[in-house]
Length: 274
Image (cartoon, rainbow, N blue to C red):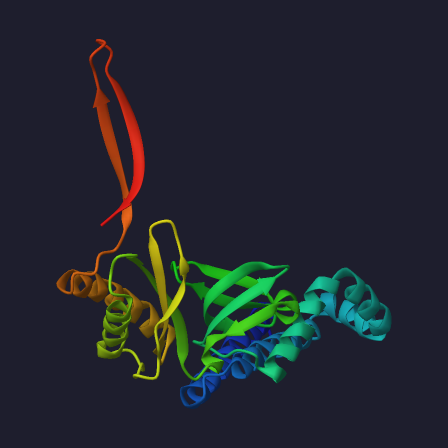
């Protein structure tokens, strides 16, 4: 058989095997789209590629002796390859560890922290034999090596039953604090996305030069709901505070113009106002 025909057959077999593996794992992922399946698919494709490549090399006189020599010297070859590809093997081993322990799954929100710095934060989209793909909230995809993921601190928000987010607002010293706290509590309860009840109290966090800081916790089912609910509640509080005569202090600038000597001078005076 012609050498080109043999090579073509092996290439077709490789493509067919890859297509079959992808199809099988695609059907399996519809029932359970886990990181374990994604990683296993990547490993199976690599192993099949090596087997087909070696089998194809055995079919040609030029590559047959080379492949036999490499196989006979497998111990030395493995030692050299291991030394030369320490980082790559580290990613593979870490990928196996992550696949077995499953600290995160596909489409889960995670935050990856290493050395006190956030490396990536977003949705897990894929895990391969080398890296994990995280789609960040700004739309960018962050490619993180598995060895980094295995050694980093991972915060998985999907492990939390409900999400709690602090909400703070400042009111003036001259307002009815109990009334302001009641209005804030009712605004949190009224929002359709919150899980807040009368038991979720509003507290006084502290004092500033302009007023008193009120603080509460907004509870929602998910992180996305939390962002939206807090935004809606802040908007509602501005309107409800106006309605109940509760003012939010803010910095004002008073400019005093002094004359009499022909030279005008402006003084700036910062004060808290409502």
